Image 1 (tube, rainbow, N blue to C red):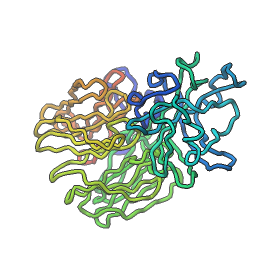
Image 2 (cartoon, one colour):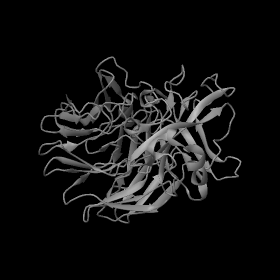
Image 3 (spheres, rainbow, N blue to C red):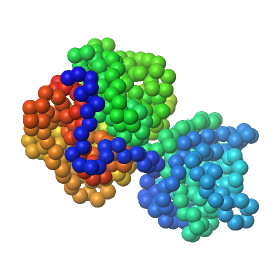
Image 4 (cartoon, rainbow, N blue to C red):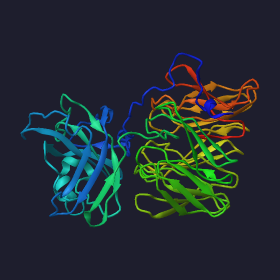
Length: 471
């Protein structure tokens, strides 16, 4: 097929393929519905999340930014409220674990222009943040280095009030490990970047194929409808595209089993980053395991059921045993805390085993029949990965929705062969059903996409034998 064929677009219904992304804020790193609220509005979990925290700094006593300082998109738009402080604009909440439970409270009142909370975490949290019984059974708890804590902000005054203000809005909850010496800088994505194969950063999955015969990527950019052709890798490499530099765009990347090396073409600088991590028998399982908005290099080793991960935030290597012989790795954010969870699908029993990062507990669900292909994704748009399978014998998807625990099914199939290529092709934050295959003897390969916003779209993109992405 000549290159012009790669930019042919056809619509089976009038719904456009290129709806703009909504820019949904990232999910809460700690589930507020399971947190005890003290000295603040107890219904804060239900408040609309209208802003995202993008930066958090922790500083020691005596530093110009002592305590916690936050950057978020509504910092200049939330209105001031009339309280005991002139121009009070927002409240900083802390989330901490003590007395056998997660606790939260809106503690530090911030007026416009105040740069930090004051009162450092390691030396002052118990004394200056939660210093009396107003903060429940966990009052007086003093965090230590490495302890996990959460932070978020709400509009207006939330300290010592029951309902909040006329503007009842909040940010997402971010979580960090308390840094040594009370000194740390943490960055977070401005929106939920669950979109795979989003090379132009518009929040929409770009239909992509990898041609193994030449090591060439063919990318159908959703923002321009232009075809981009880039040679990156060879025929034996495994595509592992992801956002390794955290700029909101998918980077070209391959894993080379022959030498266990990852080659990443970073979209921010167009430079090459190479890392030797893994061996020829390992299965690459990239994901954001530390929640910093960057894809982490990771491998699953079938021989011993081990997961080995390089955390991009600290460059530390962590290892977890989580599999039995024959299991298929299916990483995803199943608990919606913004971190990729380690998970496997066991074909012999149809059971999914998930290690939830928010609680470090296991969730197991039977959801498959013999021959099913696992296709996890966020099919209900709640910020959590849903368990799902594609049944080739019927061309049908079966999804266990995390929001309702109900089943969603959809059929979409080609005449000759089908590869599921689920992604968010309309940018609404919901995973769409999609298939790559050949239709009625057409020599080209086509994509059929059932858009979650309504309608079906399709695109001629690739050749039989190409490896479609995402998969």
